[in-house]
Image 1 (cartoon, rainbow, N blue to C red):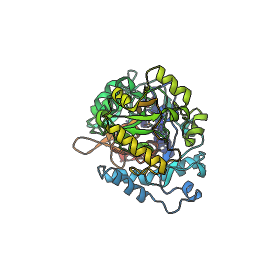
Image 2: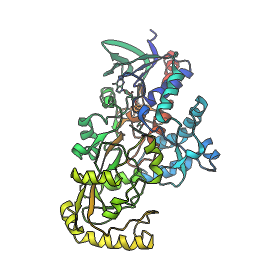
Image 3: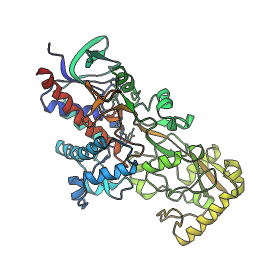
Image 4: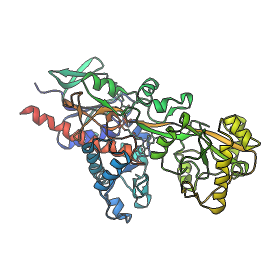
Length: 469
Ligand SMILES: Cc1cc2nc3c(=O)[nH]c(=O)nc-3n(C[C@H](O)[C@H](O)[C@H](O)COP(=O)(O)OP(=O)(O)OC[C@H]3O[C@@H](n4cnc5c(N)ncnc54)[C@H](O)[C@@H]3O)c2cc1C
């Protein structure tokens, strides 16, 4: 008996829409089942930046000779080779194709907006005009009329028959398909799963907050596990450092801040990209540090010029203005003391180690050179005039989670015996093993979402031919 659909896609965010588009292109009959009121998920809220190497946008921007192979080597090295190479390689190879595909569908990537988002020194972070919302709107329009969509329908059960996934159960009905693609996003909005599977993010209690969509409840884990899926990526995802002043997204913090750990020592170039900072901060005692500055710095505080445009567009906020900082002192969110020693006592920073660190940093400020970590900064601010301030910093803004159903390079979900589960695919945040402990840099998640979403859709659609034989 012919099933109801060729492909059922569970979750209509970025990965689900990419999968639907590609399955439709092969002539498949596709159903998207979406828990929310509308399609889009976290993808709709996102910056939509996409990491890719070897694109026409790069060439137009004058970045010559970049290749997926170079990105693969960078990614594997960054992760100390603790990634399945075939899965990582396929991601690097598919990401430039995803950019060209979006361009062909009408998304604009201005060459001048291309920037360096990782620690590779190469402009690979592609910025779509209109951000993630534009990508969702365009994909939604591209599949409209060709796909069935069931909104406000949260899928909690797969139909499993004769060892293969044969469809879903939703709202009491059984709907059958040759293949099911799980693209329900991550579990950032589920505090219980966050505590279990991403403890480094959950450890900060009230500080921890998730910036994504409310339906990121981690349903992929239960759905996949019921089908015998292997799960991988414990404690992986992306958190951003925050002073916890407000629940407001701030991606880039001012370069003049000086971070010290509880031992009173600097431990990092404070301007290092967030793909590195999150891990370095996690490794400090208590998973935290302190941004230390003085009254002169507070009085002249301003965000970095690079973030001004995003602040103006309302995409991110800033806490780093003289008035705001004054307010945080009053609200006791920012520690303040007349002397450095009193500040160290209040914050629990080792003294006099802090004094030694500050002496070195102040000498570096005079030289205009960070002799310890090589921070490049055109706004070095010495820590010299009281009162002194310390903002506790924690990696507590959860951007996405990466623990998911282990897939192979064809986006097939693997079982615990490392065999593909017949009829089951996953992509995006629901897929495990694609994003490592260290991500490429800005745009990594969307590269995964679109690349593996497309691969999953194409391969899921092929099963109707396989099953027909
Ligand atoms: C503010 C913000 C900015 C970001 N900026 C970037 C960026 O610039 N670049 C980047 O790479 N990453 C960025 N990210 C992360 C990135 O956007 C996400 O990781 C990505 O969009 C996830 O896509 P997805 O398709 O896996 O999940 P989603 O887009 O969240 O889609 C999942 C869908 O599944 C639905 N769903 C969930 N459970 C069920 C169920 N049981 N049944 C049916 N439907 C279900 C959800 O409602 C949702 O629509 C950002 C995230 C946020 C929140």
